[in-house]
Length: 422
Image (cartoon, rainbow, N blue to C red; front, side, top):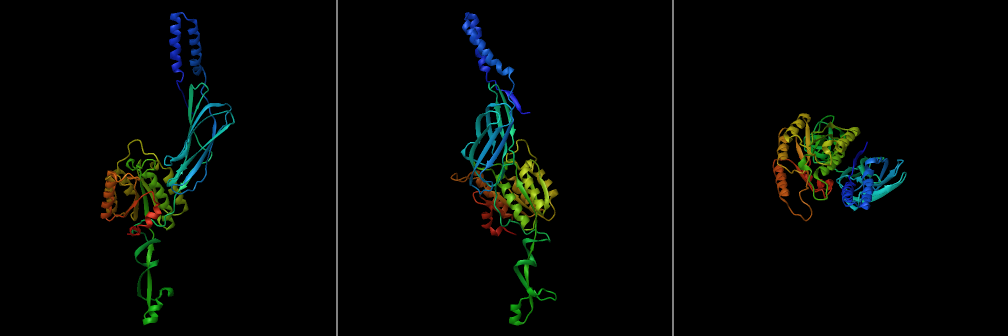
């Protein structure tokens, strides 16, 4: 049953009515007593009437559900009264994802609906990086007197989502690899595409590996070796602690950007034959063991979309200490796993945790969305402190990608090739 409560809309009328009736008795004015009687009728009506029982069907349509960052799209929401009675006062607030700003119109609408009638309204939204799911619409219905109000959530008939992600050609992984063949260059010869060295020919070497040009020149048989390419076991860790829920006015916060980047990186690393896992810091430590394949990809994307730790709204209560969460994550990490952390680096506690992971044999790389500055605002104290943290991590040998969300992650990584496989 939806929540129903009185609005006390007629409470003021009741007070005036009682005052008028009392004055009419004292002054012996029948006309005032008549007015007071009418006021009592109006004030009593909500007490004897029943609250509305809305039965609504909602549909939502987006003009484009596959977008680029900054592109605008139109949302059209239609509400139908499928109940037997009319709704004289209906107010709708559409379930717009909190990370998406409205640039034209409004996601709020007020109307009245007779049985079987529909009402539609539209507004224009600007896309932000990530996959964004619309939430149920909030509906408030009042009876004809306005004395009773019912509030309920109404889901659209089908899920509404917009996808604003881009492909990333390569992830900034370290040279901590497994024996499986992949796309990370190793420091020894084997199967690969990059030249590594030549060595003396051995019986059984493939004919196509013989350096025939050298043989023609000096009559010496030598075999060409390519740099071996290995796969990695990687755990993507998203910083979703309360401190990470920061962003410029009207823009998504760092957790939204980190989750969007994690979705892109999952596809890239799995396509490069790496084993990929998912974890996070925040409300708790979500965990998906490293794996491969199409089913594993779906499990990873579902975890990033639906787990409570990765919600778009920050936690309202207390969360476990970072040291406790880090210890829990270390206990779950495979021995050969490296860590790719996504965090805005807005506190001094996390860099210490990063160095501890790296020192204990789990090579760490960091992608840090910069949400400390906005256009025209200049550097703030938070930006200066963050820059210092990035510098200290790099000085400790930990690769850090300083990512401005105004650019795509793919473009940022292309500009920093020195961070790969170090």
